[in-house]
Length: 161
Image (tube, rainbow, N blue to C red; front, side, top):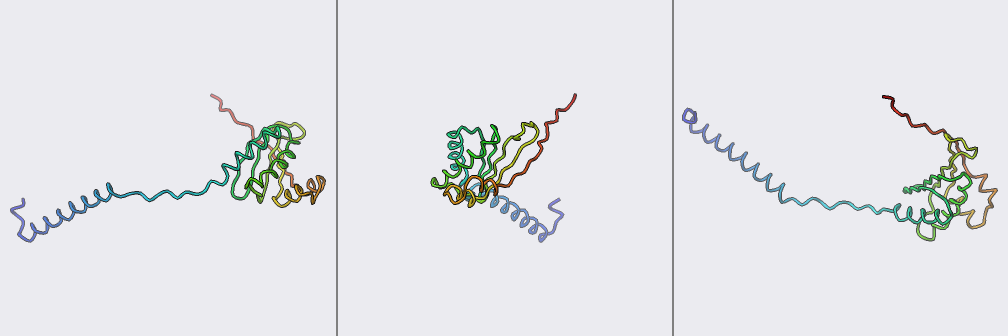
């Protein structure tokens, strides 16, 4: 079959095969010797503060989970609804540790009336909480500023066989 090709066609075929082989070998060499760029390391601002917050809550006798984002501290209390005050108090002690003040502190507590499928959210801003910690506002004034929202939890659906 190669004998039926003209000299120019054979040269073009050899050039094409050489080009493809060179490209494949070059790509293989680049793939093997290429060093991936270093990972971008974002400082984990939340993890050390979450540990400090969990310790502060434990010291207050509050069973709670905490999650901290760049904008907010989110606390879910598994005890009673009045433990929200303990959470707010413990949160003020975190500021000297370099944790906060946060733009928003949201505390999710069980329903004060004891309904199992209802929970209550309390929200305060960092400045409101700081004013309370510094004695600029009292408990009643802080309670007036506190935003409250009740919500109903959705029960888990168990699939039937």
